[in-house]
Image (cartoon, rainbow, N blue to C red):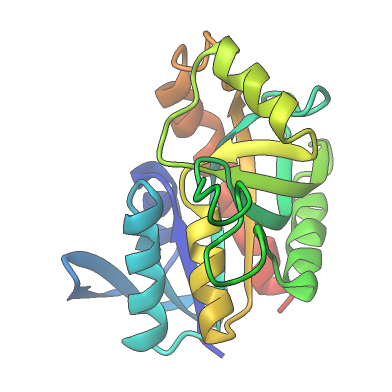
Length: 232
């Protein structure tokens, strides 16, 4: 079973590639896909690129070209729910596009012609990811719940509070997950995502973002993916 490991940032992908003994580069759709083994498992590692359309393209190529059987996403997100703090980890159980609004033809947030406003993560895969977090990072707080995606880096307190008010069940906000979830729904491919909270999606969100990715998130991602694959 080939597993796709999709990273949001270059630093996270580099941390994974450094652990692959036999990665072979293949180019498709202008993207670099790294095919090989990680902790004894067949994997394809790739950078998602930023935003919903780019992420959807990456997921489609993984399924069509590389025939992956499951997709695991690892990256960072902004915390929304009051108890979700910087350094915590969120394992998604569902995904919603917070910037999708085809009203009045369809209800706000509903994906046109699907009849739903969110797509679930694969329960089994998400459970395995949550266990991997607890195994690899026992001192880190883990949350499970809805993650929202949009083509905007949420970085003002005003917008963060607006999202919290409109979507009180949302634990975190990012830019790719809901798009990949929809593609995986269409193809029937299991999908799960784990996000390290890098900021609170407020006026201070841009502060030490790059340093956090380099020093914390990339280390977390490598540890979580490692524990996940070793237990597979």
